[in-house]
Image 1 (cartoon, rainbow, N blue to C red):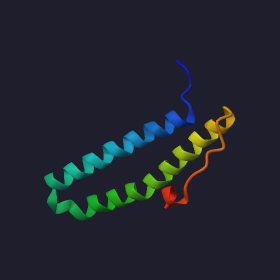
Image 2: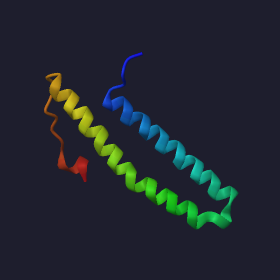
Image 3: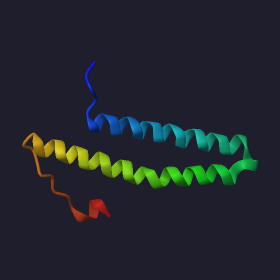
Image 4: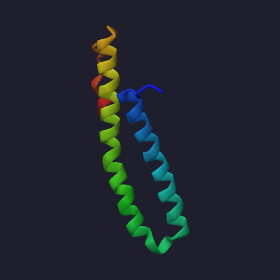
Length: 80
């Protein structure tokens, strides 16, 4: 078994984040009396999601650069 790349690792974290988001949404229906608590957890996930997306994008760009396919240029509209 080989060591996962940073891109694969971040991808796995994003999958876990998506799973937790779905579970929290399901629990909001099942436990409406705890909606505030569950919304707080969801807000924390929302804050970390942007960080994971940025880490994933930076990792992919570094990989492209190292392999001679970069640097990657972006339209500023795409990053808004």
